[in-house]
Length: 178
Length: 178
Image 1 (tube, each protein chain N blue to C red):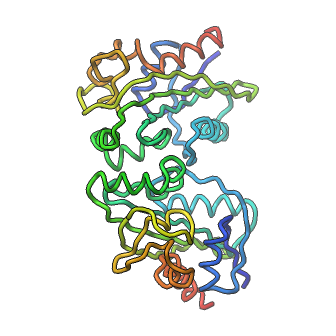
Image 2 (image 1 turned 30 degrees about the horizontal axis):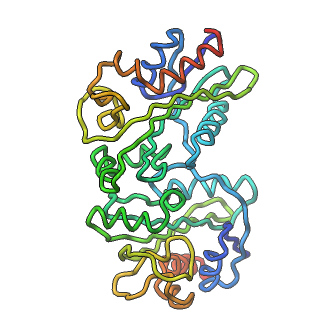
Image 3 (image 1 turned 90 degrees about the vertical axis):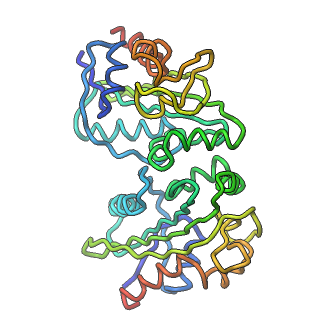
């Protein structure tokens, strides 16, 4: 079975490949619907991608949830990054007195027959003043619980050991017996 | 010409009716795409509504832009309200030391022939601690520049005198010579 990962993000593709080496990336620019529930966003992406090709393929959504914002930004993270950057995200949480954060990846898989399944990975942690230059997105402000480094201070291998994306990808791999 | 306003919000319908009495509401639950540019959101809503009926009809997007968040929440306002409420929106702005805000309505009109046009209304103001119980959405924290009342402290008539929705609706009315 040839499995495709529909993404334009090379960093995400590399992380998934480290768990499922045979997966291949395919870039299709999919509109994202506006919703706070990542599964709603992912299912809409799967449905839209089906207009271009049939399954099996995956899409993923990785969201950052701030306690201080009662779960925002969640799937709306990219708009927060565009507007206020990683510094702004940290300073909002810090200003509200709660830097707890949750990083969550959900992989949406659609089979050749069109059946949809979801695989989740979660990492609890904190947002901190930006440190490090590796990774992408909000890696520089996310420090997993029990770690002294942000994702952006880790090597790709170190990050992948801890990553919510890896956990989700492992669940997918085990389910598909890849 | 019978003009429809596709909305499920009775408050918005009443405001538009005060300018264009002949308009009628039609409730269709349209998915909103995730984007920070309201015109992108509106155009997608118009296109989706076209799957249910032909023009002429309008949809609208009313966004609140906070200086303190470099333009967020914008069209993402409903997710902010759901997560942190009006108190949270105010306290985020206040905590960041800048309560300037801009309320903007954009009406998207699609003609019988499928041509799209936009009509905008903007009101500058401030977010303040919530006061008043009239109106809807974030009316309780939005105080227009030069006013001593929030939208939620005004009568419908007072609010409509100042409203960004009225300005946009007047432009539409004049354009269509209704």
